[in-house]
Length: 321
Image 1 (tube, rainbow, N blue to C red):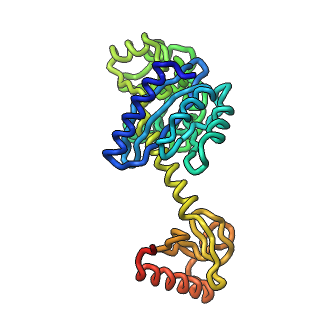
Image 2 (image 1 turned 90 degrees about the vertical axis):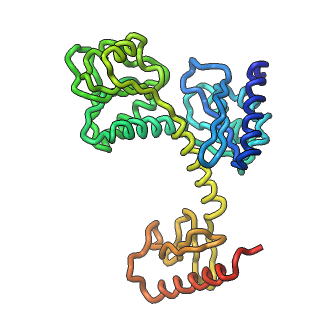
Image 3 (image 1 turned 180 degrees about the vertical axis):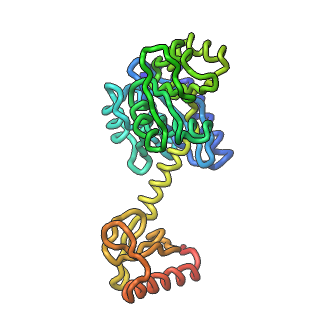
Protein backbone atom coordinates (compact mmCIF):
# COMPACT_ATOMS: atom_id res chain seq x y z
CA UNK A 1 0.00 0.00 0.00
CA UNK A 2 1.42 3.37 -1.02
CA UNK A 3 1.60 5.98 1.72
CA UNK A 4 -0.62 9.05 1.55
CA UNK A 5 2.31 11.30 0.63
CA UNK A 6 3.27 8.90 -2.16
CA UNK A 7 -0.24 8.96 -3.57
CA UNK A 8 -0.34 12.75 -3.42
CA UNK A 9 2.94 13.05 -5.34
CA UNK A 10 1.77 10.46 -7.85
CA UNK A 11 -1.44 12.43 -8.47
CA UNK A 12 0.64 15.57 -9.02
CA UNK A 13 2.83 13.77 -11.56
CA UNK A 14 -0.21 12.38 -13.37
CA UNK A 15 -1.73 15.87 -13.56
CA UNK A 16 1.55 17.28 -14.89
CA UNK A 17 1.90 14.64 -17.58
CA UNK A 18 -1.74 15.05 -18.63
CA UNK A 19 -1.36 18.82 -18.97
CA UNK A 20 1.82 18.45 -21.01
CA UNK A 21 0.24 15.82 -23.25
CA UNK A 22 -2.76 18.08 -23.92
CA UNK A 23 -0.45 20.97 -24.82
CA UNK A 24 2.17 19.11 -26.87
CA UNK A 25 0.30 16.05 -28.21
CA UNK A 26 3.39 13.95 -27.47
CA UNK A 27 3.27 10.30 -26.44
CA UNK A 28 3.59 9.64 -22.69
CA UNK A 29 5.96 7.11 -21.13
CA UNK A 30 6.09 5.95 -17.51
CA UNK A 31 9.69 4.95 -16.75
CA UNK A 32 9.90 2.44 -13.88
CA UNK A 33 13.40 2.47 -12.41
CA UNK A 34 14.62 0.05 -9.77
CA UNK A 35 16.75 1.46 -6.97
CA UNK A 36 20.42 0.77 -7.78
CA UNK A 37 21.31 -0.44 -4.27
CA UNK A 38 19.43 -2.39 -1.62
CA UNK A 39 19.87 0.39 0.96
CA UNK A 40 17.37 2.58 -0.90
CA UNK A 41 13.73 2.00 -0.03
CA UNK A 42 10.29 3.53 -0.35
CA UNK A 43 9.01 5.06 -3.58
CA UNK A 44 10.33 8.18 -5.33
CA UNK A 45 8.75 10.25 -8.10
CA UNK A 46 11.38 12.38 -9.88
CA UNK A 47 10.13 15.39 -11.86
CA UNK A 48 8.34 14.93 -15.18
CA UNK A 49 10.53 15.62 -18.21
CA UNK A 50 9.77 16.61 -21.77
CA UNK A 51 12.19 15.16 -24.31
CA UNK A 52 12.42 16.00 -28.00
CA UNK A 53 10.02 13.18 -28.86
CA UNK A 54 8.13 12.16 -25.69
CA UNK A 55 6.89 13.05 -22.24
CA UNK A 56 8.53 11.07 -19.44
CA UNK A 57 7.23 10.43 -15.94
CA UNK A 58 9.37 8.44 -13.49
CA UNK A 59 8.99 6.21 -10.48
CA UNK A 60 11.87 4.68 -8.51
CA UNK A 61 11.05 1.65 -6.38
CA UNK A 62 12.39 -1.56 -4.94
CA UNK A 63 9.46 -3.97 -4.55
CA UNK A 64 6.94 -5.68 -6.80
CA UNK A 65 4.16 -4.70 -4.38
CA UNK A 66 4.87 -1.01 -4.93
CA UNK A 67 5.02 -1.51 -8.70
CA UNK A 68 1.62 -3.22 -8.60
CA UNK A 69 0.13 -0.17 -6.87
CA UNK A 70 1.74 2.20 -9.38
CA UNK A 71 0.50 0.24 -12.39
CA UNK A 72 -3.04 0.50 -11.07
CA UNK A 73 -2.79 4.24 -11.86
CA UNK A 74 -0.81 3.95 -15.11
CA UNK A 75 -3.60 3.41 -17.63
CA UNK A 76 -3.29 6.93 -19.14
CA UNK A 77 0.28 6.29 -20.29
CA UNK A 78 0.95 5.23 -23.86
CA UNK A 79 3.98 3.18 -22.81
CA UNK A 80 5.44 1.62 -19.66
CA UNK A 81 9.25 1.23 -19.76
CA UNK A 82 10.58 -1.05 -17.01
CA UNK A 83 14.14 -1.41 -15.76
CA UNK A 84 14.84 -5.14 -16.18
CA UNK A 85 18.20 -5.29 -14.37
CA UNK A 86 18.46 -7.97 -11.70
CA UNK A 87 20.13 -6.04 -8.89
CA UNK A 88 17.69 -6.20 -5.95
CA UNK A 89 16.12 -9.09 -4.01
CA UNK A 90 12.80 -8.41 -5.76
CA UNK A 91 14.15 -7.60 -9.24
CA UNK A 92 12.80 -10.81 -10.78
CA UNK A 93 9.36 -10.23 -9.23
CA UNK A 94 9.33 -6.63 -10.44
CA UNK A 95 9.94 -7.78 -14.01
CA UNK A 96 7.35 -10.53 -13.69
CA UNK A 97 4.76 -8.13 -12.28
CA UNK A 98 5.26 -5.77 -15.19
CA UNK A 99 4.86 -8.63 -17.66
CA UNK A 100 1.64 -9.83 -16.06
CA UNK A 101 0.02 -6.42 -15.53
CA UNK A 102 0.94 -4.44 -18.66
CA UNK A 103 -0.31 -5.45 -22.12
CA UNK A 104 2.61 -6.49 -24.37
CA UNK A 105 1.83 -3.74 -26.85
CA UNK A 106 2.48 -1.06 -24.19
CA UNK A 107 5.40 -2.68 -22.34
CA UNK A 108 9.06 -1.94 -22.98
CA UNK A 109 12.09 -3.33 -21.11
CA UNK A 110 15.47 -1.65 -20.77
CA UNK A 111 18.64 -1.84 -18.65
CA UNK A 112 19.02 1.13 -16.32
CA UNK A 113 22.64 0.15 -15.60
CA UNK A 114 23.35 0.33 -19.34
CA UNK A 115 21.72 3.76 -19.58
CA UNK A 116 23.79 4.90 -16.58
CA UNK A 117 26.99 3.68 -18.25
CA UNK A 118 26.10 5.25 -21.61
CA UNK A 119 25.35 8.59 -19.95
CA UNK A 120 28.61 8.52 -18.00
CA UNK A 121 30.75 7.70 -21.01
CA UNK A 122 29.03 10.28 -23.22
CA UNK A 123 29.42 13.00 -20.58
CA UNK A 124 33.12 12.35 -20.00
CA UNK A 125 33.93 12.16 -23.69
CA UNK A 126 31.98 15.33 -24.48
CA UNK A 127 33.62 17.39 -21.73
CA UNK A 128 37.12 15.99 -22.21
CA UNK A 129 37.03 16.01 -26.00
CA UNK A 130 37.46 12.23 -26.08
CA UNK A 131 39.63 9.94 -23.97
CA UNK A 132 41.84 8.31 -26.59
CA UNK A 133 45.42 8.45 -25.39
CA UNK A 134 44.37 9.63 -21.91
CA UNK A 135 45.04 7.97 -18.56
CA UNK A 136 41.93 7.45 -16.45
CA UNK A 137 41.93 6.65 -12.73
CA UNK A 138 39.08 4.22 -12.01
CA UNK A 139 37.67 4.22 -8.49
CA UNK A 140 34.85 2.03 -7.23
CA UNK A 141 33.24 -1.33 -7.83
CA UNK A 142 30.05 -2.65 -9.38
CA UNK A 143 28.28 -2.82 -12.76
CA UNK A 144 29.12 0.74 -13.77
CA UNK A 145 32.80 0.35 -12.93
CA UNK A 146 32.92 -3.01 -14.74
CA UNK A 147 31.43 -1.56 -17.92
CA UNK A 148 33.75 1.46 -17.92
CA UNK A 149 36.82 -0.69 -17.25
CA UNK A 150 35.89 -2.92 -20.21
CA UNK A 151 35.04 -0.14 -22.66
CA UNK A 152 37.58 2.61 -21.98
CA UNK A 153 40.59 0.62 -23.27
CA UNK A 154 38.62 -0.19 -26.43
CA UNK A 155 38.41 3.53 -27.22
CA UNK A 156 42.05 4.22 -26.52
CA UNK A 157 42.17 5.11 -22.82
CA UNK A 158 44.64 3.70 -20.30
CA UNK A 159 42.81 2.70 -17.12
CA UNK A 160 44.62 2.52 -13.79
CA UNK A 161 43.30 1.51 -10.37
CA UNK A 162 44.86 3.59 -7.59
CA UNK A 163 46.85 1.91 -4.83
CA UNK A 164 47.04 3.02 -1.20
CA UNK A 165 50.27 4.93 -1.67
CA UNK A 166 50.95 8.65 -1.66
CA UNK A 167 52.94 9.09 -4.87
CA UNK A 168 51.49 11.46 -7.50
CA UNK A 169 48.98 10.07 -10.00
CA UNK A 170 49.83 11.18 -13.53
CA UNK A 171 46.26 11.23 -14.80
CA UNK A 172 43.91 14.12 -15.52
CA UNK A 173 40.63 12.15 -15.36
CA UNK A 174 39.26 10.41 -12.28
CA UNK A 175 36.03 8.40 -12.37
CA UNK A 176 34.14 7.51 -9.21
CA UNK A 177 32.05 4.60 -10.47
CA UNK A 178 30.55 2.95 -7.40
CA UNK A 179 26.78 3.38 -7.41
CA UNK A 180 25.76 5.54 -4.45
CA UNK A 181 28.85 4.58 -2.42
CA UNK A 182 32.05 6.48 -1.56
CA UNK A 183 35.16 5.53 -3.51
CA UNK A 184 37.24 8.75 -3.61
CA UNK A 185 38.83 10.13 -0.45
CA UNK A 186 40.89 13.24 0.27
CA UNK A 187 44.17 11.31 0.09
CA UNK A 188 43.50 10.44 -3.55
CA UNK A 189 42.53 14.03 -4.40
CA UNK A 190 45.85 15.19 -2.94
CA UNK A 191 47.73 12.94 -5.39
CA UNK A 192 46.14 14.43 -8.52
CA UNK A 193 47.72 17.01 -10.84
CA UNK A 194 46.44 20.57 -10.81
CA UNK A 195 44.48 20.19 -14.06
CA UNK A 196 42.58 17.04 -13.08
CA UNK A 197 38.85 16.52 -13.54
CA UNK A 198 36.95 14.37 -11.05
CA UNK A 199 33.71 12.74 -12.22
CA UNK A 200 31.19 11.38 -9.75
CA UNK A 201 29.51 9.15 -12.32
CA UNK A 202 28.15 6.71 -9.72
CA UNK A 203 26.63 9.50 -7.57
CA UNK A 204 27.93 9.82 -4.02
CA UNK A 205 31.52 8.70 -4.63
CA UNK A 206 33.40 11.59 -3.05
CA UNK A 207 33.69 11.92 0.69
CA UNK A 208 32.84 15.36 2.03
CA UNK A 209 36.54 16.01 2.71
CA UNK A 210 37.48 14.91 -0.81
CA UNK A 211 34.96 17.27 -2.42
CA UNK A 212 36.10 20.18 -0.23
CA UNK A 213 39.77 19.57 -1.01
CA UNK A 214 39.06 19.30 -4.74
CA UNK A 215 37.31 22.67 -4.65
CA UNK A 216 40.13 24.22 -2.64
CA UNK A 217 42.67 22.96 -5.19
CA UNK A 218 40.56 24.28 -8.07
CA UNK A 219 40.01 20.88 -9.67
CA UNK A 220 37.08 20.41 -12.03
CA UNK A 221 34.22 18.52 -10.36
CA UNK A 222 31.33 16.87 -12.21
CA UNK A 223 28.36 14.83 -11.11
CA UNK A 224 26.47 12.62 -13.59
CA UNK A 225 23.21 13.91 -15.03
CA UNK A 226 21.62 11.11 -17.04
CA UNK A 227 18.70 13.01 -18.57
CA UNK A 228 20.10 12.71 -22.08
CA UNK A 229 20.81 9.01 -21.57
CA UNK A 230 17.32 8.05 -20.41
CA UNK A 231 15.66 10.19 -23.09
CA UNK A 232 17.72 8.61 -25.86
CA UNK A 233 17.10 5.14 -24.43
CA UNK A 234 13.33 5.66 -24.62
CA UNK A 235 13.61 6.93 -28.19
CA UNK A 236 15.64 3.81 -29.07
CA UNK A 237 13.04 1.55 -27.45
CA UNK A 238 10.21 3.17 -29.38
CA UNK A 239 12.17 3.07 -32.64
CA UNK A 240 12.79 -0.64 -32.04
CA UNK A 241 9.11 -1.22 -31.33
CA UNK A 242 8.20 0.58 -34.55
CA UNK A 243 10.63 -1.57 -36.51
CA UNK A 244 9.41 -4.83 -34.98
CA UNK A 245 5.68 -4.10 -35.04
CA UNK A 246 5.36 -2.03 -38.22
CA UNK A 247 8.36 -2.39 -40.53
CA UNK A 248 9.39 -6.01 -39.99
CA UNK A 249 7.89 -8.72 -42.14
CA UNK A 250 8.17 -11.11 -45.06
CA UNK A 251 5.99 -11.61 -48.10
CA UNK A 252 6.24 -13.62 -51.32
CA UNK A 253 5.16 -11.89 -54.52
CA UNK A 254 5.27 -13.78 -57.84
CA UNK A 255 7.99 -16.10 -56.50
CA UNK A 256 10.00 -13.15 -55.20
CA UNK A 257 10.77 -13.04 -51.47
CA UNK A 258 10.52 -9.53 -50.00
CA UNK A 259 11.84 -8.97 -46.46
CA UNK A 260 12.14 -5.94 -44.15
CA UNK A 261 12.96 -4.84 -40.63
CA UNK A 262 15.54 -7.19 -39.18
CA UNK A 263 14.45 -10.67 -40.29
CA UNK A 264 17.24 -12.93 -41.51
CA UNK A 265 16.29 -13.13 -45.16
CA UNK A 266 16.77 -16.18 -47.39
CA UNK A 267 19.25 -16.11 -50.24
CA UNK A 268 18.03 -13.94 -53.11
CA UNK A 269 15.36 -12.06 -51.14
CA UNK A 270 14.82 -8.38 -51.92
CA UNK A 271 15.35 -6.26 -48.78
CA UNK A 272 13.16 -3.17 -48.46
CA UNK A 273 12.71 -0.46 -45.81
CA UNK A 274 9.11 -1.23 -44.81
CA UNK A 275 7.18 -4.43 -45.50
CA UNK A 276 3.78 -2.67 -45.53
CA UNK A 277 4.63 0.56 -47.37
CA UNK A 278 8.06 0.13 -48.98
CA UNK A 279 9.71 3.15 -50.56
CA UNK A 280 13.31 1.93 -50.90
CA UNK A 281 15.23 -1.22 -51.85
CA UNK A 282 18.32 -1.86 -49.74
CA UNK A 283 19.70 -4.80 -51.73
CA UNK A 284 19.64 -8.55 -52.28
CA UNK A 285 20.17 -10.90 -49.32
CA UNK A 286 23.00 -13.44 -49.40
CA UNK A 287 21.13 -15.82 -47.08
CA UNK A 288 23.28 -15.38 -43.97
CA UNK A 289 22.83 -11.78 -42.90
CA UNK A 290 24.58 -9.65 -45.49
CA UNK A 291 23.93 -8.23 -48.97
CA UNK A 292 25.19 -9.60 -52.25
CA UNK A 293 27.89 -7.45 -53.78
CA UNK A 294 27.46 -5.54 -57.01
CA UNK A 295 27.31 -6.24 -59.87
CA UNK A 296 24.19 -8.34 -59.45
CA UNK A 297 23.40 -11.26 -61.71
CA UNK A 298 20.48 -11.28 -64.20
CA UNK A 299 18.04 -13.04 -61.84
CA UNK A 300 18.79 -10.62 -59.00
CA UNK A 301 18.38 -7.60 -61.28
CA UNK A 302 15.06 -8.96 -62.48
CA UNK A 303 13.81 -9.35 -58.90
CA UNK A 304 14.93 -5.84 -58.00
CA UNK A 305 13.24 -4.38 -61.06
CA UNK A 306 10.00 -6.20 -60.26
CA UNK A 307 9.88 -4.92 -56.68
CA UNK A 308 10.91 -1.43 -57.83
CA UNK A 309 7.98 -1.40 -60.26
CA UNK A 310 5.57 -2.34 -57.47
CA UNK A 311 6.94 0.44 -55.25
CA UNK A 312 6.62 2.94 -58.09
CA UNK A 313 3.00 2.03 -58.76
CA UNK A 314 2.16 2.24 -55.05
CA UNK A 315 3.75 5.66 -54.73
CA UNK A 316 1.87 6.92 -57.80
CA UNK A 317 -1.41 5.68 -56.37
CA UNK A 318 -0.83 7.61 -53.17
CA UNK A 319 -1.70 6.59 -49.58
CA UNK A 320 -4.12 3.72 -49.31
CA UNK A 321 -7.31 4.23 -47.31
